[in-house]
Length: 200
Length: 200
DNA sequence: TACGAACTGGACCATGCAGTCCAACCACGA
DNA sequence: TCGTGGTTGGACTGCATGGTCCAGTTCGTA
Image 1 (cartoon, each protein chain N blue to C red):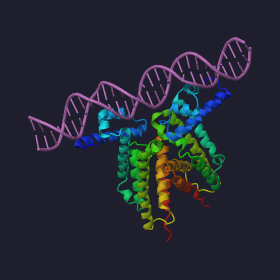
Image 2: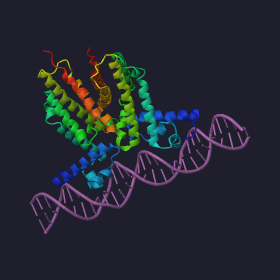
Image 3: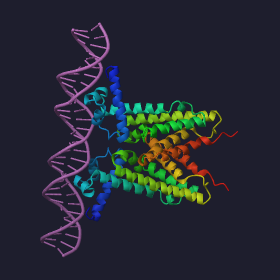
Image 4: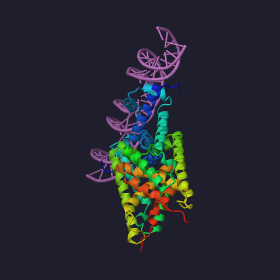
């Protein structure tokens, strides 16, 4: 890929963000390059100018961008999570991110199911994103333990996995109902794992 | 649709089951009628003979069949669930259904995310399936409460939703890893909601 | 101003896929 | 045996979509 000027970077970014919206709304298969072209007021040649690898490369760029957005939405709490209050603030920010913006789906999770079989390379990106996310949450659980606010008998990795599962599964249930209550119920139940204080 | 002979019924069923396999492996969009035709040793005309509504009708038939299979796999426990042991047996049967058969995905859940936007009619079928399933689980939770094994302060519907979310989300995480541990961790955590005995 | 590199527009191509059509083949009852 | 209705095979069509190509425009810089 050649150098990008400021203008080029903006055009590229516009394409990525719009494609992200389309994918979230209709999935990868339901998103056509022509839709993206029309919505971004660009042309076919621009799409392939910025993403020579075609649709696959574009989708991958979207995955990375959306992943970064998702992590940014959890700042700064996701790097703390050493108190129950911090967890609550994190939870609120996350639910706002999903529901408040009318997403009704996780940009990572929705790719996971669709890409798992068809695009192994993308599946690897998704799996890595889950691992990174899980590591952050597990670190938070450990911080709770180190601070003596949580018993040492719970496995941070398993707690992190169950919290992420609650998010993903909650969204799966909330999406067709278009109502956030399953997501909130699932997340609340999963966070109860943090309510077992250390015996003193 | 005209009457079906025994022979016709078998052919139709063969098409449904094979399509189910393809969809689970590659999604709706990744499943082509030509693939189905080849795998079932049938012809295009048969596909449209048995499913005049085309791919949409076929997918819907698959959803109903797979949904019935999923519910059957949970029998007889799903109609009991009045003891912790019954819940454990149910859980084991369900995990076997998903993992033991190499599914790595929920036939209902995988449709949910893909169909939500594109096929509103199918989305309604999926939403109904979730409601029915949730009603069964919530009934089990109430049975636990009626038997005095679980406190009355927990909301059966929310518990049922969080358990279903754990299943769906656990599968989302397990799928790219091809390892059932996130599913098992999530389900274990969700079932802890049943471990709050009634105060006496 | 001149020039090259990045950027843009849109016509065009190839292909894969859902869906159509019709002729032929059974199976079974009259 | 004949006829009717369900069943099957496969060629064919139309269209959507990913991808190519090239000519023209803008922009930064010397």
